[in-house]
Image 1 (cartoon, rainbow, N blue to C red):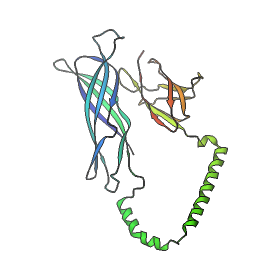
Image 2: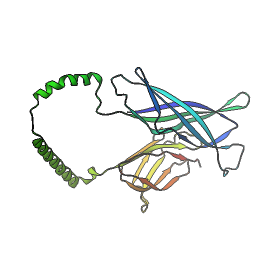
Image 3: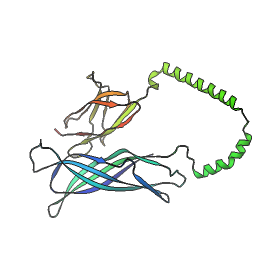
Image 4: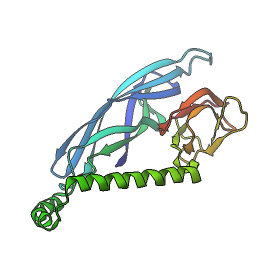
Length: 271
């Protein structure tokens, strides 16, 4: 189960700034509690902001950093017949969707951010709702009475026969269509304006091999700055992100592992 959450936060500023980047740190697993038919999730995010003061005209100056703590919590309806033995992990860490600097009376400034994070909630797949589980236990003695008694030697022989037939079918499929049996990976994420921290629409993402100049995989970010590349062959690539209004971003030796669903965000700087 994948859930996407958004939170609007306000940070005080000492002066007007130019935002150069944003990153976040979270705990590996958010804490959670159950109350009646609600799942309550809590965590504390450390938001790290890279910036430069507008008063400094030297664009080559090293950026300065601010760090803020954000206490976050949210609720999800959770029926009583669902398992409460769950695990919660971050699919994507908190990142900025929009940013805005608001001027207040008395020359005070506030940085307004909209943060978004995606959580993956998993629970045992073999779990049955309580009504079905109790019904199954009531019917179990009747089912056992109707089952024929099969010696374990015969069961073992049947199992070996089935396994052998399955192995032969897999080998035949690999010989006929080898590409269908190859483990693939995927790469997804968001393209963001490093200055305004807003999505970059229609940015081109290309993956090339070290020895080749032509792209092997290519896609374009959507109207939310999100891109997705699937059916990637594991290996080492050169990643290039382009947009007419931004400086190109090139990453050499980017490793994609076998059967990996990788998430990677990119920050682009304006020309």
